[in-house]
Image 1 (tube, rainbow, N blue to C red):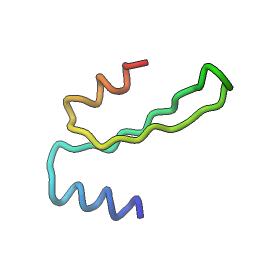
Image 2 (cartoon, rainbow, N blue to C red):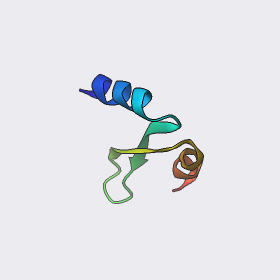
Image 3 (tube, helix red, strand yellow):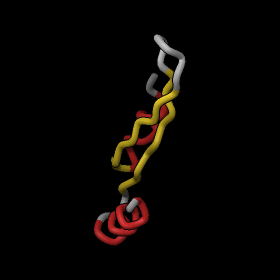
Image 4 (spheres, rainbow, N blue to C red):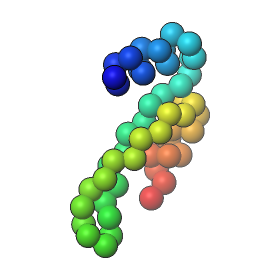
Length: 50
């Protein structure tokens, strides 16, 4: 299903990226993944944010 989502985003909208970030929980120490679909301008802010 991920391939269909990415393929449809590339056809319909230009400048949109699916960003996946690995975040570590301070409480348990486990890693979780945060996914968002955003414009190219906002992706660097999202990845630099803690």
